[in-house]
Amino acid sequence: MASADVDRIIEEARRLPPDDKRRLREAFDREEQAKVQPSDRAVDLSRELRWIEEHRSEYVGQWVAVRGDWLLSSGPNGKEVYDAARAAGDESPFVTRIEPADELPFGGW
Image: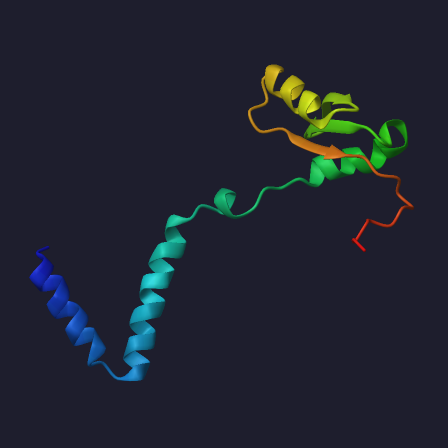
């Protein structure tokens, strides 16, 4: 489509009543939302979080890399744990430090 055609369409859209402008905007928003796959919006970590809760006492103070129900690596250094999980074949491992269940998170001073 030529630039002049786009400019003409934009000018016509500007002359629309407010309700029609809203409908037009919503139509374009729906079109953009349809392009986003559900997997792009959120990652399901329920299995990883369940594993952490079940094994928390074994790994308190340690970094762990978990995929699903499997421990990929663990240790005192987060980067090393991440690198080991990547070396094991997981391109995007879930890595976290295990904190005691009864400890409040640090919120700053």
